[in-house]
Length: 311
Image (cartoon, rainbow, N blue to C red; front, side, top):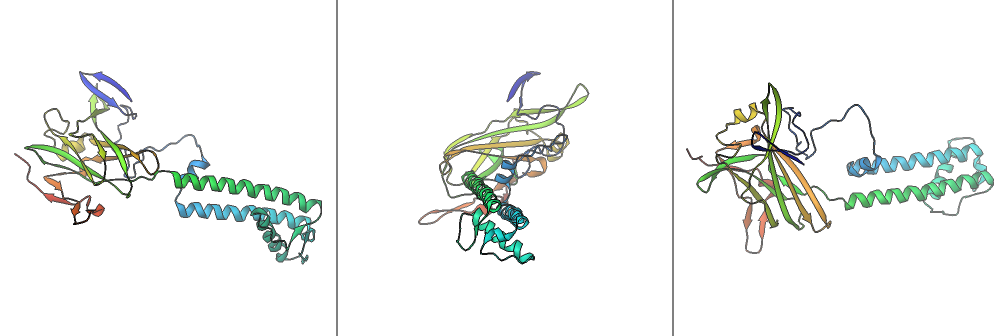
């Protein structure tokens, strides 16, 4: 992160630069950057297979398994299935299917024993067939482990922020909760604001970190409402929704914490534009106390109630 002073004001550039003047959100609702790369293609099969949805991942594995075994079945058919004992050559599709069944048995090292190779050609192909199977299962196992061991995005953000009374003042708030029933500890919040400003006749993007009443909590058992007091030093001071939209105002929240289940740090980001900020509202309590436990209602994270703002 680069920090520099300009006009006696601390400008924080989190990496987007001052020339990124798009009025679209910097952070998308799924937490990804709103950046589309063009001009040079780079494909990383590992990143794709680790990040692709589960159903598509399993489908890719199954289709790849069928394609590889079909290729080996074609080679067995070309040299003649009579080099595979137990298979009678018929000069029909049955030859290919029989070779496919044998390839699957070799690929998976099942080896039922009903069919085995005889002759140099069939034995050489079966060697490569078995080696490919071993490598294929090693790669598939590694990908499965990587997918299971990858921390999921367990931080749930409210879709909206509110400007509401707080201890005889006015404050901006949004809230987060842990989607999973695991322990996340030492949770920290870092909140930036960004807006467009005219500098020497051209638009430039400005950044500033805003103060929070609490920016770190040790435990995260229920929800956490993150509060920024709007005083004379706040970039939200005396601003309306229309004014915020006019300057491309955006609040960028970054949350990090330690997930004890995965034994590693987790990170999550979210952004709030002017249209996502509600004035004269406050969040409704999203957990209830019972005689035996606390019940956290994740589906209530966006529920609001009216509250008058101080004049």
